[in-house]
Image 1 (cartoon, one colour):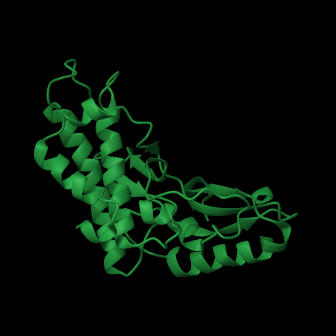
Image 2 (tube, rainbow, N blue to C red):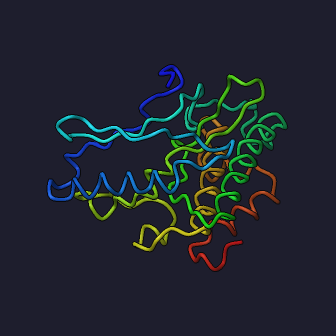
Length: 220
């Protein structure tokens, strides 16, 4: 393959995995790759295969190279008045990211697949194709299910995931709403999160409030 089109997407440091679990961890990764790595959707990063060091000290996935930035690093346009509603340019850019990501998650959910780790560092804004395109990473890592093998691993995601339950489509919805809230706050310099959110349209805040309910049954 053209190595310019590939990159090592991520590496699992195996010091986090007890030695007795390392063979199982690699098999989980390979199994997740066979089930989820070949999915073809413009909002997902393509994954080509696995890699493992000669001493089995680390695992990796080999993925296409994506020219862009994770959304936690991008600078949305900011208005000078911290008390005024978000300006149209900022709001359109923010909702454009969310809309594309929601479409990708909706496609996954219609296939019966839950991502489970939707967060800003796993969302890349691709900038080399003219119109910005949002790409979602980490599906294979997430579905590999390393959590029970990692020493002292920290749970993350929706409240039910923190409590130890398996991720669901409702969990992805919660994480998308949390990411949206974070983008709104990030678009407002020097303002508390609560004050920053008041700059968003009321209709959007109502949607976020329901999507961020602790009880998955109370979400959309």
